[in-house]
Image 1: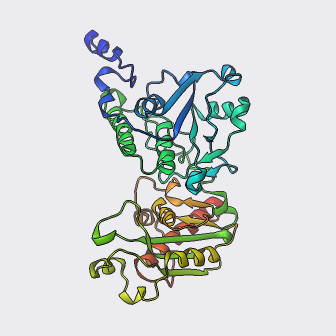
Image 2 (image 1 turned 90 degrees about the horizontal axis):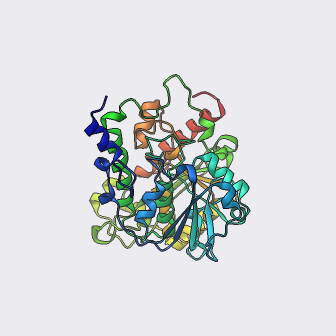
Image 3 (image 1 turned 180 degrees about the horizontal axis):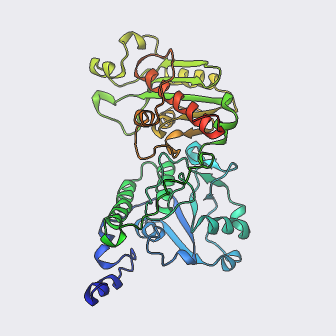
Length: 388
């Protein structure tokens, strides 16, 4: 039993982050000058939850409003929507935020805060929300929200989802990673707290994982429309790493027919001999390198309108942002909950005893594409029940 003094210390709370005063982390929360207005609609039951992250977002973002109420009262409420407003909500009809050209990005983004049941009820019972354009994210990794249970392994906390959305809508905005660090600090301090021992939510070892909840339908039902891709990036001019890196080598292969795509792309960066060795390529590989415009044209001709581009890391897809291309639907395999406790594809393949697929592509890019193809084939078998 806790002493009166210790019990009193736990009753005292910071009403900014709503943590016990001894666990207050307000000094970790940055002030962020975001351009896109964030409007958080929070279910009233979330308001005083000790681990709710919406209040952290509200404290950090300079351009953010938080509205808290019950569904019934929100139904007839007037919201301060801007002319260009969208809502962050997953679904087949939702547009991937990373696919939006800059001129189509919303000026305001509505974020729903509550349980998954609360969010679905909001959408179902608040008519004005149903009229908003819907946007979705493509998580590169499972949520780090270890102290609360998420509906699926690809679901994110309100804070993680808001940061991910802002990174897509306004990548130039600074300190978004500091907000994630504050979130991680909150999680880690709670996990390490002595009263938390044994209380973390974990899936029991004897409860099977349901892969269909996390593997994209396209990969399970229509593998003939899957194109697996990998790209190498330039290090930057004069060896200085650029924040927005350009693709210099791109490889891809259709999952079923094995039709291949491979090309080198011209870059302003200096490709040193050491860097070429790192890529496991020869200088001759770049003798017929394409311009970015030529690469965009050839890549667009290779893809069919209903193809889905599958990669392991979201950074691969971001290489296409430097090239003017109408992006096909895409999926990041790292977000699938298969050995998500390891970060690299090679580590996952080793743990799952998956052998690389044989490909004829060159260099390190070819090796990594072979790994990505093998992992995509594994996920297809896992999702369809055709072996594991």
